[in-house]
Image 1 (cartoon, protein in one colour):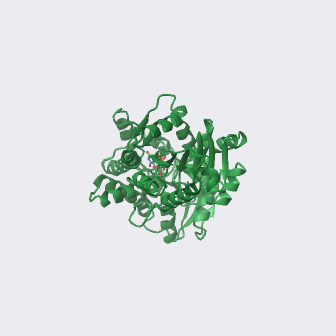
Image 2 (cartoon, rainbow, N blue to C red):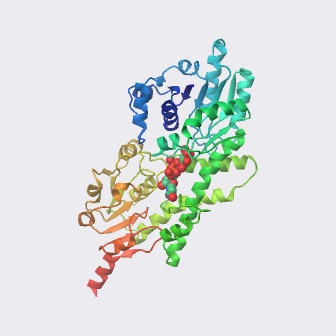
Image 3 (cartoon, rainbow, N blue to C red):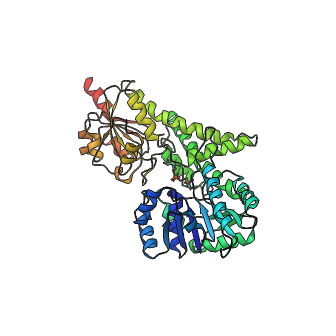
Length: 455
Ligand code: UGA
């Protein structure tokens, strides 16, 4: 099929490259010409494992192109994917101005040309848009170009860091359309990606749009639930990781998205949960579980922070903190809503020095906060030099097996606050260290040794 993808940010680019992979002819368009030029050279503007390979293959084999002219992208297209940002506004509701500007531009181009084009074209919303958007878009097009554009909703379920894998082998594909012929075309488009038998569900617009928000809010709720139980664990002497294993073995619950930590971040869960509340509010409803999910997530960062505050009795001035991980999760350079940003900010406010290391997200941090006086470390051990404590804020694989002796020797004090529960408690007990994690008993072999020496 001939496809246009409007907006080649993270979702649009993975969609464009992923659709080209199964033989479709895809033209990507974006208002950011610099980005297009990079893409034309085969350079992905974001870090996403496997994307460079797809991009290179699509370009080389001529199935994937990037056009600086919208008309060139949409005229030959049977399908026009909209993968534009829908940023949050003041009250959490999604801003649809990019979507409707693109709709206007499409209408202007098609109004001039009517002959020899695939009719009707299908406009597919890939961005996360509030319930009701597809219906609004359809009536926008009907008022201006009757019968020439049909709207479908096709929410994405891509996880950053696994987006290529998630696109090529989706758990499910959701298509929202009231028109069976549109449903058939999109089903055919996605069949090559669901050969293992994963379902393609065709439903009405509103259900498709709400599925996306409900799925993200549900996953966020699981995390907040575990974070809340983790707090209780610390009071009753339980271990959240044991509780998690015990719960997750129940097939009705499942093992995934049950990891307690310092709270979820990223560009999706925080934004989509707030947007869902905004939608409910517009309909006169309160979604108390979603409200609680957001509140618990915000408290969780504070909960972690208070461990540090309590240990140092509020005396952070002049202390040095090593930070491992600033990305909101591993395998991405994305720092949006990353818990690390909050922790770093609080440390700076209280006069602490910071030595930060992240395998790939330091440039993102430097770009976003050029005024923060941080030391950008070369590697995890460089970050730890002379530190009064190490804070683990992202669970990058390379942090899982440190050379303990080398690490602890470098530090000024052997103190670790682990926001991601990376280490076995038994292993930590065998070291001389004060180790604090989430929802598990603390290990204080260092303080105990000091105390026993003093007596
Ligand atoms: C999320 C969804 O997982 C995707 O299905 C969805 O398509 C995407 O949002 C989106 O709406 O575009 P993503 O934001 O890339 O994907 O990140 P996740 O891997 O889901 O992680 C989100 C956050 O939850 C991270 O901060 C992670 O550290 C945290 N998390 C995840 C936990 O704290 N505990 C867990 O058990 C799992």
